[in-house]
Amino acid sequence: MALEGSVNAQGYDIIGDIHGCANTLKLLLGKLGYAPIAGVYRHPSRKAVFLGDVIDRGPRIREALQLVKAMVDADEASMLLGNHEYNALCYCTQSSDSDGNTYLRAHSPRHYHLIQDTLEQFSMYQEEWNEYLEWFKTLPLFLEFDDFRVVHACWDSTLIAEYQHLYGHNRLSDDLLQESANKQSLAGRLLDRLTRGIDIRLPDSLSVTSKDGFVRHFFRASFWVPDPRTYNDVVFQPDPLPEAIAHRAMTDEVKGKLFYYSEAEKPLFIGHYWRSGIPASLTSNIACLDYSAVKYGKLVAYRMDGEKVLDERKFVWVSVEPQEPGLPDWESDSDD
Ligand SMILES: [Mn+2]
Image 1 (cartoon, rainbow, N blue to C red):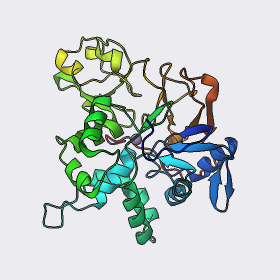
Image 2: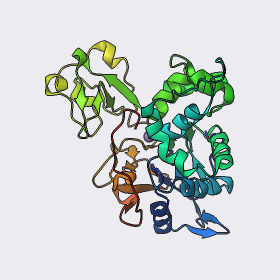
Image 3: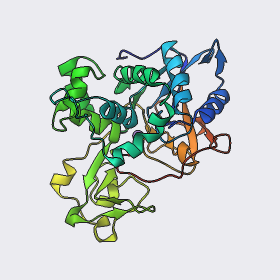
Image 4: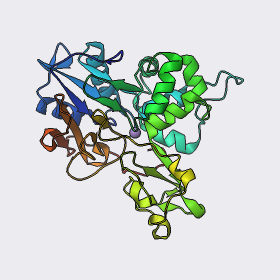
């Protein structure tokens, strides 16, 4: 079943988190055989799929959005909503059940810090930024093609089925955006799970302090390990778990928060997780394409041609080098 928003092509180039690295994106598209024609990057026979998180952190956010949206408008690409686009919507949208001064995402210093680069780069282009916000509301939260699926962080088929059954589509609306601010609502649970993945609270009030000093009480869990037993079996983040619990068995309650995407399912592409090293798939049918471009990592694509088993030779990437000057010193954050 192909959902609304999918486009027909001979093959698809699926592209990870851009975070304002527009120069690197142009290099990657060039490497993949796309060229600008009448202002839009096109490939003679292929289409692109962007996994979300085009905004925040990087030096050329507006340019990256212009490039991607032009491709989507010309039916040369699809783009998913990432957690950063979702955060931007919530940060910039007032709550409908308030006096008009409360936003769906609180204007705390930490939340501002995350979106600061985007708002600053659009400070002279407020009208244009408002148009992008309207566009974000129309972006798919998940997309299913004939041979593969894409989602920003986690394909939770149970929540996806519930959402489609209730609403009959794969995107937000003004009402659903408002509803999603309630984290217990279906929209709230779907947005959190699909764009941010699975967060598990560390037991015994333990925490993990990342290299740059950010203290976390949750860790990021994978969703592709069959029959996980210990916390270490499912941890999926750069920082290791505290020794005290790494090899401890998870309780049934913790296991109940997990989700499992089996190798019998269609290939799945995700972004979001700040990978490093040489791009490779996670399992025979799941690949994460976020290799931390904005942290001087790599902007990564996978050239999908309908194969059921992902092929290591089909990852294509550009290492982020001085063509992307102006990258900030990177800080960790619970919403990254
Ligand atoms: Mn993300």
